[in-house]
Amino acid sequence: MLSSSSSADKRALAKAARAVADPIDALLAAHGLRRTSAARAVLGCLLATPDTSYTHAQLQNAISSATDAPLDRVTLYRLIDRLTQVGLLLCRVDASRVRRYQAMPTSVRTMPHFECQSCHRDSPLAGASDLERAAQSAVEALQALGYKGLSMDVALRGVCADCASTQGLA
Ligand SMILES: [Zn+2]
Image 1 (cartoon, rainbow, N blue to C red):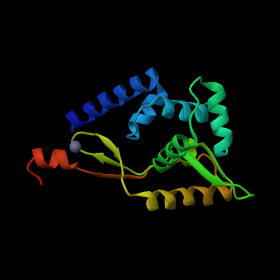
Image 2: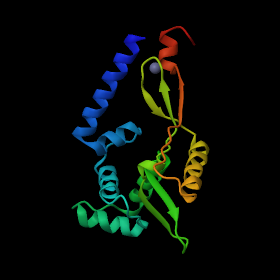
Image 3: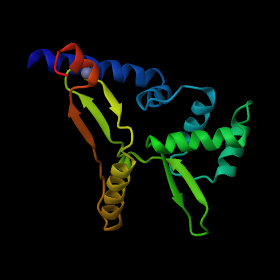
Image 4: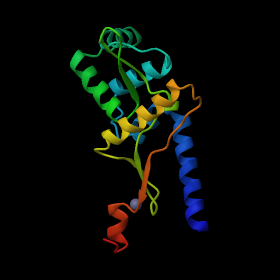
């Protein structure tokens, strides 16, 4: 299957080029999110301090002081929701039951996705949040036992609807 491996190489190169151009834009696009200035600011702020977890208010303050376009509370809530849903943010409840957010550590990035074996597009799996939670709690359980350097790739593979219809597989 020479042709499929070379197109996978090209796709990897294109992905790498985009990531070098702007890793934050690339992350947003790869997770199907709009590249708004607010989304860039939130993700940029969290990725710049990957070991810090913020409350909603702390995050709002950090972004307001880092940019000249402060975010309103509701916009920030919506963005946090979206970023958490796609697995870019990790949300934890601290000992005083306050939600805290941080950039998803790469060790626990368990975003389930679909890989089309025909066009090699990756897309996030809609409605797989149970699967994602299960995968994440498995990683966290192993980390609690002292396992290090964990990574996980949750992927479904097949032929996407677009390819199936053009190939008469539907
Ligand atoms: Zn396809």
